[in-house]
Length: 277
Image 1 (spheres, one colour):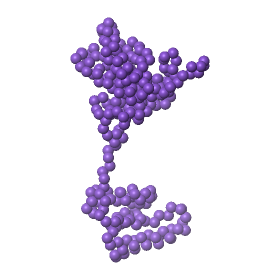
Image 2 (image 1 turned 120 degrees about the vertical axis):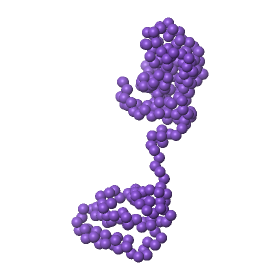
Image 3 (image 1 turned 90 degrees about the vertical axis):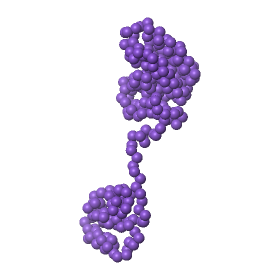
């Protein structure tokens, strides 16, 4: 790298720390450190290497890792958390080592083996939002892996976090569930399908003067008379479902959206025509 030139690259960043680390250390410093070293030696380091990640640095209770692939980063985090659940099953609740993890994809600055930048900071903020034993990811991570990995996500909405100018859209990985319906589908109940009439329908709406020109009022009166005459003409609508229940009052001042008006007519009057309301 030439002098003064900053090295940048796009990477998936995994930030992790131990939930309740201070309490664990307060109860048993040596036991906690020994347990953490065992977890790293037996699980953390091998699993990160298996998924082609690099441990950037470790702290007393956490680590920072980078991956060239966001799929590898998410798969690694999920496998780590699931194996930690199995390891903790026989441990007393107050002695369990539970990691919180956050994953982001972003442009990072690389210097002397360390990494910096908003991409790293966001990963750390996501980790702080995760529950013990949980994983939070940014929207770009969710979008990149949702069709590649069999995991479900829960949308946590936009979160304002420290030292990040814009809110972050956060998603939580549901470790106990495989992928299912999309989040938008689960958040929004499906609209029931309406059965169509078995014959054509027509609605002749009232004339409305939308120009503000008072000279057209007399024209409007003639159009209204023509409308009523047309609707009441014998034989004019044989074989056609006539929606003359839509009166002048029902449409006065309403937006003239033919699709919505037809749908409303079917919902409100379908039962009288043998259709589901």
